[in-house]
Length: 104
Image 1: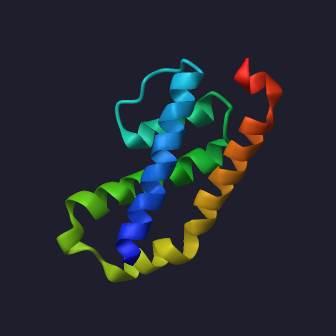
Image 2: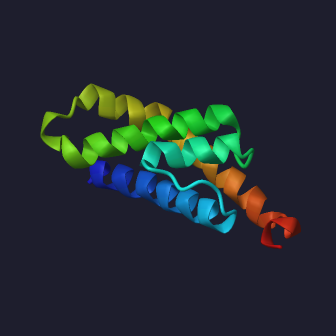
């Protein structure tokens, strides 16, 4: 159940990132990791946050494609340390959506 919740949370961030990219008519990402890198390079989110989110996108791929070999210590570490990354992304998106010029 925890793994599924992690997957859903990370996937939601990816979906939001790709929506922002489309809205801003930015370069189309070729990977989930790249979606966050593009947002960082465009200045829509801080570069450091973009790196952390890119790492989470990589972890999402492990959850989906290599779930039978998961290191539960790694999962616990992500759960304990990276939830703040998703919360930071949420805050950045809220700030973007609060800008009137973002919708022009």
